[in-house]
Image 1 (tube, rainbow, N blue to C red):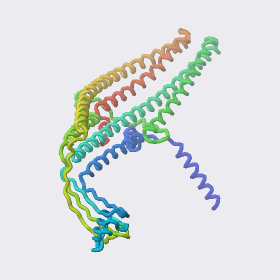
Image 2: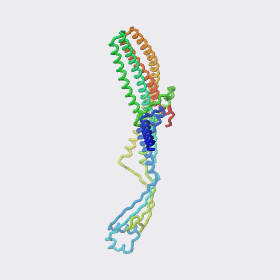
Image 3: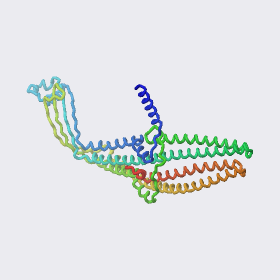
Image 4: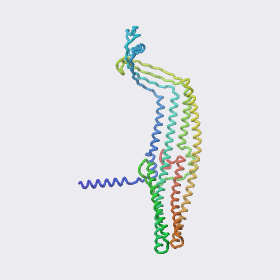
Length: 446
């Protein structure tokens, strides 16, 4: 039984170690979805939005009844104070009217308990402050939505960077295989007396350089995987699912132009403009009076906190009208109007900037698509050229340096094709981001 338990423990330990060592493989859509849930930047901004939402509640609270409970203690021999305290405690007697008692009373103590309520009836500034706070909250919510699109775009870029790095590793391995094959050919020709020893040395150097390039590309791949994991809120590297389709397709230019007009950062500015206009009305409402009602219930006791030797109540209405406050309202009104003007200019500037960004991104997609076609054509030419030079070298019709040059050109062309293909995908994602359709591409709800 003890032997069985020991093997079971060893099995679990081995299984756990294998599981820990495995990298997470994830599709592009799942990577974006996970980042939108776990990214630390988004979580921090989400808390900021929640704080702005709480500001709406703070502003609304000034329109609701204000309830207070107070407990005060007083001990005095002030004649007026003693007279008032004894009346409130309902223990005033005829002897208290004696002149000596009135002029030189004994000290008395009083525990005063008061329950009070105040309800504004006309409070224009406070009502407009709720509207302004709500617009600020909506603006922050739109900014958060735009940040989600930005994180999705960064995940896309990081995801593509991993795939590019993986392809560069593949290209580097293929280049190392070709370099080793050329070294074998050069060495064979030298041993058979058909080639030069210098060709063997050059081939050996080329193979070493190809191996060094492979080491560098593998390092870049490791960094790219960790970077992708960081965006997903993880500390471990994350690998891509090579078989997944990103679903990026090119639409008509008018589609992107129309969608960009409702981009979230643009809508956020529009909400800020509405908030600024509300602030103008808030400043102007400072000239109006505030009207409300208030009431209180009071307990007084000589010896006991919250005691009730005497009790009384009060109901009142009030009107507060600030006639002059040093010009503060005028400056607040002027400031609010300048902020409205600022948001108007910002909105107009952003509309023009967004239109340019969409236009530039659309042209970049077309440029990248053409570059992919040219890179594919170049690769076919380079492969055929390298094949012909290798044949010529094997038949002693070309020097070895020509074969090295052809191989370097082929390696560069392979890497260029990989880069151009991924650049095309990135340009499509950039177009979606600039037009505000990044999440729609992956059917992710705002």
